[in-house]
Image (cartoon, rainbow, N blue to C red; front, side):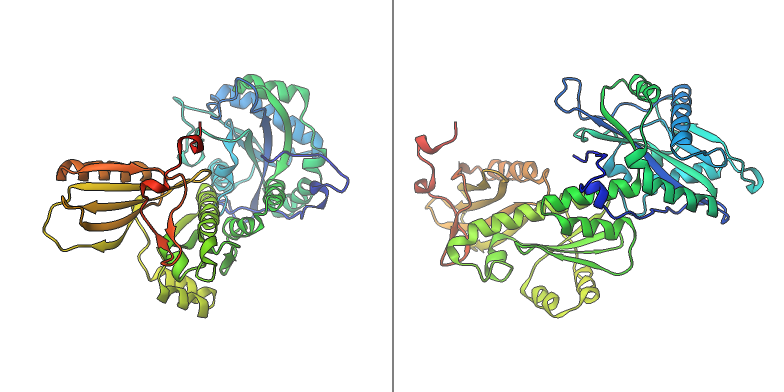
Amino acid sequence: MIRPARSTGNGAVAQRKRFPVFITSTLPKDLQPYAGLLVIELDPQQPDFTGIPPAPLDVVNATALAGHLAKDLDTILGGIEHLGLILAGALYDQTELLRPGFPLLGALADLYSGSLHGGLFTPQLMALGTDQGYLPVAAINPARRPGSGPLLLLPFCFIGPHDAINVLARSMENTLLQNGMVSDATREAVQQAFGLQALNLSYATIGDLCALLRVQLDGNGLLSLWELLEQAWFERPGIRVATLAAGSRFLVAGDHAHTLFYTFDDWAQFGPGCKWAAAELGQGYRDWVQQQRQYALALEAYGLHVRWVLASPQLEQTLADADAEASVAAMRAIPCLSGDFLVEGIFRNDSENPEQQMLITHQADPELGTLAYTVTGLDAQGQLLRLEHHYPLRQQGLRVIIDRLLEQCATQGATRQVLHPGRLLYSETGRCLRPATLADLPTPHERPH
């Protein structure tokens, strides 16, 4: 959670890097937008906290709320009557605003542009409300996704001539977060309009939000994630590369992130784990999966397209020898992994005997959950017909794998047995996943209650 602190001592806010964040729009060349935020922090411990942002306001309530915000901002910034101001009567999760190029903020500025008759600029206050439950432009409709955090944002956008906006931008970046107090009237209006109880309200800029997120990620050892996000959000030229401690590699170019997917066998035999001691492979692969999932999920949540490519020894060598641009080109030349799961075929017997028994090992970690399913197919005599590892690429892949295995058993008339050793099982000599045996299963007193 990002809490907009107001410390002016040696805290993160005082030390943050201040930088203006300008957005692109269809405004005439002599006009420029600059965005700000009303930051609303909720208490997730309260019983009325649902994790779903409230519905957007109708036009009447949005207009009334806009009046309160305009009055606050006029006081804080020393007069805004010479500027246009537009806001949507809606609350957003920060992942909806912090996206490559900040498209939602650009859409706000574009809507103001549509009010300029004959291109003539007239300062006015515009409030966008719902019509039959939806805002007038799809680009600014809040997603209202379940699981949104306790920090909700109400964006607004100033419009004005370049010189005036440049002065405003410096003032907002230097003073808004630390000195921009929300009035009691605005606090009450926000809480009543959206039907919520706020723990804290404050004004901030996009630069403030980015700086605070950077501090949060850095404090959790995720500075490389911030650097990848920053590359995409601000549409930096070139390519940003991040190689993580567990061996994950991400390359961000534009709004795409490229990364390699390793099965356990590939990771341990020629991938980042090839130099690891055999006894440490399980923990090493677990760390790799944890970082890979964490980064991929965060990049996708903040608007990047994550492109997974299956690792191979040839690609590994190419990436080791190539610079960033050549590495991205090499990864783009390979079809990305599609679908929700990956099947790694290890062995298949050409025997015509039908499969009569399916043994399934649930390769899992207590914290990360399912890592893979190892599937062994046997004929009536117990002869091995196939050995495969099924890897979920996305959360929904777990259900797809299970349904496919159930369907295979039903189609073939085979029995099945699922073993849950509660950990990742692998051969230290072969550096590869292995099926479980009854000896690998936890005893009753070892099983979690």
